[in-house]
Image 1 (cartoon, rainbow, N blue to C red):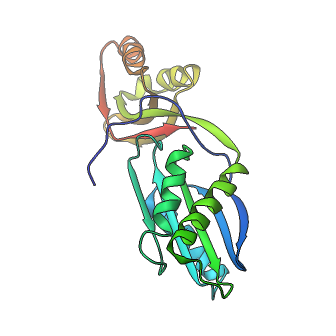
Image 2: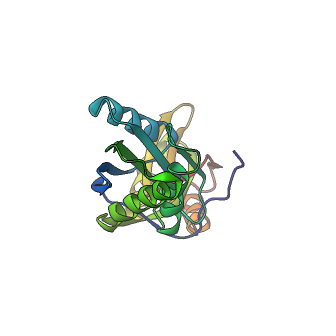
Length: 215
């Protein structure tokens, strides 16, 4: 996968999972939408549905990680349906509707009537679209993960500053210095580092450490 730059503006994700069932020529398309953080979480949700609803005809899925207009990763599966008739139209709908950090799974119960390729594309895409109509959304702010190392004498003051600035503290490591791992909203790095420099009289380390988002 080619790495993509971090998102530059707030975007919307599902506030909670939701579900919708579409019936098409006696086939049932049970659609489930889940907010996700990574591929492993997405595949685990698919496997859970397989175990909870054994014997279905197909378990098709698609997901987008990151903002829908600038995805960090995306994937889909037709799970035995004709190629291009299930997962891809599901992914297209997620993209068109701006469903960021979202997994869609459709558990199909075959009703005995074949829909044809065009009918399957319309059914799978329509099922996801109907489910999205019922979804609740919330905004998330992209952040940059930073690791800051300070002397033990400065830890309490720095923690207080982070709390005042509403900066999320993701973890702490105690070594020769205290390493605080934080999620800094984009555009706030320079201002926060200046505060850290003042608090510590310049005795600190500041290291980017990956990519996060702030809910």
